[in-house]
Length: 315
Image (tube, rainbow, N blue to C red):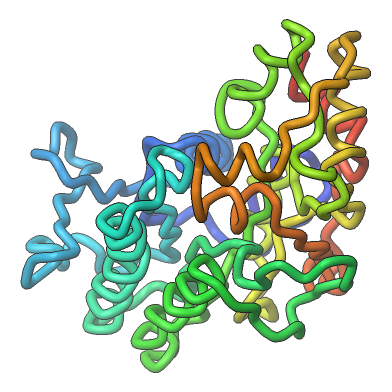
């Protein structure tokens, strides 16, 4: 049975059988659960605490087996893996970089192996990744055929995507969701930026010329559903708008929406002193990524332009 999508644009072909979600308490996890519920799709959640509901399944990626009740996953139509430590939660010390890597690479490897062993594995596994895989590429236009870059984030994303290989080897369609910056009204980057801009303390990061690949939360969720519903999509898929902007352009757009000036730049050297390696790879790096595979498959964006997206997010 076909269930219409929430936006009425990207038509599904999948039926409403159960979907497994990890990272369900995060911004994207909560949003995709809401969208699946709107389709009447049952959701099973992987949790690391004692389960408090029949729909919650205990897992520990560092344990053997990672999912003691793996039989509960039999017959799921799809799995969406969104777990991962927050990149911006701490300075990137050696210890925190190990935590970041383990939370993504080890968890993906454990889930992919568990799904591969099922008698009735899901048809599709969507795994979060990031446009950080392209590294710092200046003005180069990047699509899914572009080679990975260099640096901690690029290496991490490459290992993250490789970790899903056991699922692909078992015949599961694996999609690597290369997220850009997700613009959400209640979480993510805007939660930190909006209060500063409202106080008139906003401004570009560094010289502001670095490209920023972004996507609205509504389009990110719609793109995930579209990836679930489109059997021809496998491998890397950029979840970014077709209209990336420079950091300076983003700064001006946010200032316009908030009716505030944005004239206080954050110098690159100050960001490096405060944040270390995170500044160079997460804030000052330039990735001009476009969603070539989504667009060629027929996906249509609700918020393709930055002003549209910010207006919707700030309502």
